[in-house]
Amino acid sequence: MENDPDRLRFMELWNLEVQVSTKAPIRCKWERPGEGTTVLNSNGTLQGINGGWGAALRDHEGKVMAAAKGRSKFNSIALIELEGVYKGLKLAMQNRCSKVEARTDSTNVILFINK
Image 1 (cartoon, rainbow, N blue to C red):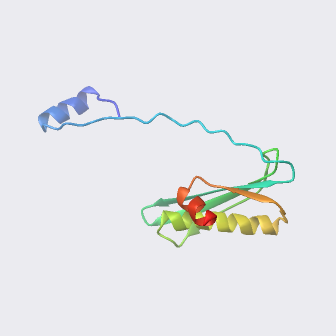
Image 2 (cartoon, rainbow, N blue to C red):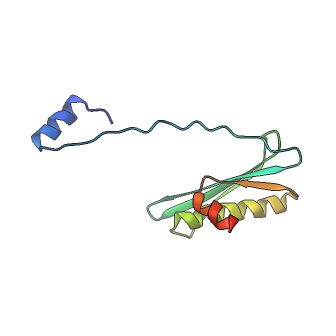
Image 3 (cartoon, one colour):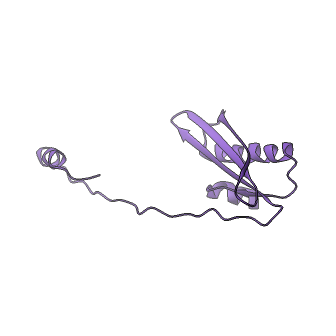
């Protein structure tokens, strides 16, 4: 958020002190799995009371083999993220994938699965 003249006048008028900070973007690179391995990339989102999940299967070259998305009945982002993995694994079974590597950005899901 930039401190433009209008914003500065507003803060001065209302005697507000605002700390502005920005986060540096994190650069990520998709890593290929070994040949014969399918990667399941999944994600979930929750905005207010509306949640949804997405899942994509990719081969060892990164080509999308199948994808699915849907709305979620859950109102917990952890459950929605987990639902994305679950639906993605079902999609992998439907596509007869024998070796699947699940990848998610949800630390909660990773901790839950690794228990």
